Length: 570
Image 1: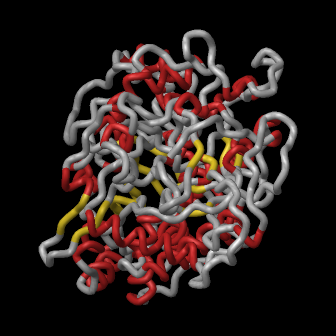
Image 2: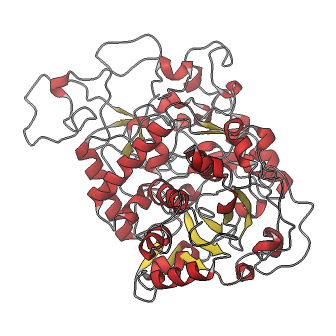
Image 3: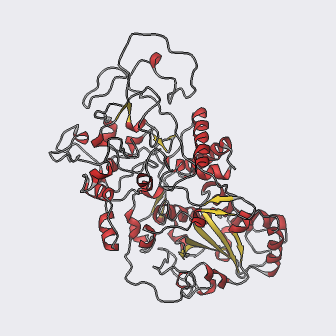
């Protein structure tokens, strides 16, 4: 297809971000309902969905120039407004120029629209960020404005004498991607869900080791004796042919229903597909439920550190360390839930803390394609069978299994009473292999040493650390992380490494077979990435310099070498 400058809407230039009680004693059935982990299927995928047509009306608008769109009668039936394709041919009409699709309207990884439909994309303006999530401005200063671009209304699409463009797409405001496509699904602007003041961000939320960690094949896809298997890592990692085909069916189902999703939910598509046992229609239903849940739960604004820090002081829910595969561990101390919360029916405060922790994990503790899961350590010390708050723990299961699907690698239940252990043992006999892999009832907390270094655990959980008394910021420690390691921690570890990724970089994207492995695995970095990577002694990829400097740095042109090379959002 021919290439020319892409028209940027005035709204995109202006920036902005559309905001859119206890158990019944010895009931083994109740315990079974509590301990059954989320049953996640294995296959995922990535495919292609058809792009929607431009919706601008005919005629010329003020600069920048906008391509003239055809009248409704001539529009392709495969549009966002009319997702159902028609078998009837369009009526004959006078020959006219065929409208080009803007690059932002194309499905992820597509460098062509539907057969016969030309596209419009400038090689010097191809976005450099991950296509699976909107670009969230790290600061107001990062937003492109006419003043910062020399007062030229069209500066965003121009280059200087050295062929460098003035602003990379990674700094474009999120409004630029309104009603766009992410991971092959039609998307809507992301709902703000989380905000943590820098003063409450743990210094070792993300150790430098995560940035180069290569998970073992068993950690990527776990295989079971009965022939079943389950994918654990979904984003920025290659999927099998069958997984790609299945996901394409899910995209087509979503298109047929005319549904739209938050970009972060589209990056979870393979997790929903897995949970639905490869039923595309059911997967879309689950996807819609989570999208609606996020819309409703965060409708009053994001969960902030200020809103939960007093409750976090109780030490009911907190992160403590990482296992040998660098998966974080979140501890739940059920016996620390204040009785007053039960009396006043304020158990939702506990759930709110849990959701804050999960959003913190997704923003600051993951590296797509490398570390995407966590472990849950449930401590039931001092609780008899009649004291275990199954209602609260049941809510934990509900939230984790429905709206954070595929994130829990293992549940470790420690310090269980004899009666409760017996009931759990009976219930475990009915679990599938994949459920048994997730649920681990420990006779002795020291069994956690098989998974963790001792410095990553408190003494009552089999570790060498004294019991924690300050729970927020989260008491995370640097490595080493080798299982069973019983030595000192690395006191020279680099702090605040979690600032290396942008928000969309932390969300990640689904594998697109139309791009090579380098592009599919590429991360999106923040403006602080170059400094952080250099402090860690790690190589600085060209795309990190683009995000940090706002220009195409040395070596960037090699990324796009070849006439067919295109960035992921083309």
